[in-house]
Image (cartoon, rainbow, N blue to C red; front, top):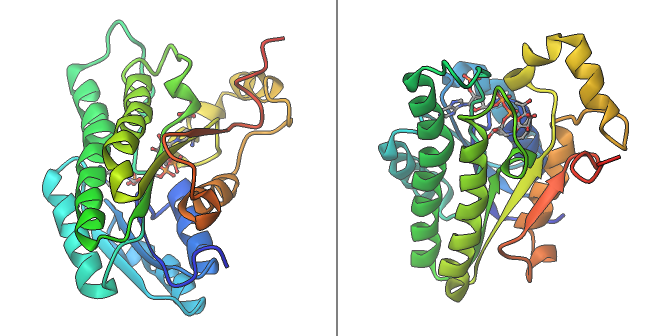
Length: 253
Ligand SMILES: NC(=O)C1=CN([C@@H]2O[C@H](COP(=O)(O)OP(=O)(O)OC[C@H]3O[C@@H](n4cnc5c(N)ncnc54)[C@H](OP(=O)(O)O)[C@@H]3O)[C@@H](O)[C@H]2O)C=CC1
Ligand SMILES: C[C@H](O)[C@@H]1OC(=O)[C@H](O)[C@@H]1O
């Protein structure tokens, strides 16, 4: 087991990539704390699955774009689980929209959830880890979109580049405390975030055609890389970013 008796916390853990990572962390021996914007009832099956692995599970409903959520989440983790070892900033939104008429509210909301939310959460998690004095691991779910653009994602891709940069700078700031900071850069993973976008079958086929491994990703494809970066197997890895995209990024021709 890669995370035996560690405390693993994740934002946006009620669905998609976050849910897959939370469940794998429990299978790997961690107690798991989840925060998400959805009500607790809808997360009950995930909490039950974590407990079925013999691990403790905690849920806090909250909006990551409100900075109080970060302190509420860390306080609940310490009260109920007694410490924090691995923190994953994952919650995010991607409301696809053209550039020229993008409403300012959509930009403000996307930046608020994806970038400010990640900053508040990572900062609160880092403070907790520093005060514990035993190091830790922070992983942020950035994106291949940190590196390449999208015509309907002009408000989204800068947030993913910002998260990638946040992990680099926090790796520098926190190295002396033994806290490692890394990001994963998923390609296109089938989740609720892109269900509508991928209902355009022509677009879906074109996207699959660019992927050397010949398929879009599944949420579970991110679980291993996230657990690995959180584990002692990655003890000399910090400031790194791991593309998890089936080879899409490197496929020029
Ligand atoms: N799927 C993909 O192709 C890729 C995804 N990513 C990133 O992965 C991360 C997870 O996305 P994915 O699993 O695909 O998406 P999902 O929509 O499946 O999961 C995201 C979860 O975050 C929750 N959430 C949304 N807004 C907030 C908020 N303000 N506060 C707390 N929780 C919130 C969502 O709730 P609700 O359902 O109510 O919105 C949902 O439960 C995101 O950061 C995304 O940008 C990166 C690259 C590719
Ligand atoms: C939601 C999109 O399908 C997805 O989000 C990303 O970050 C990837 O670049 C994909 O475009």
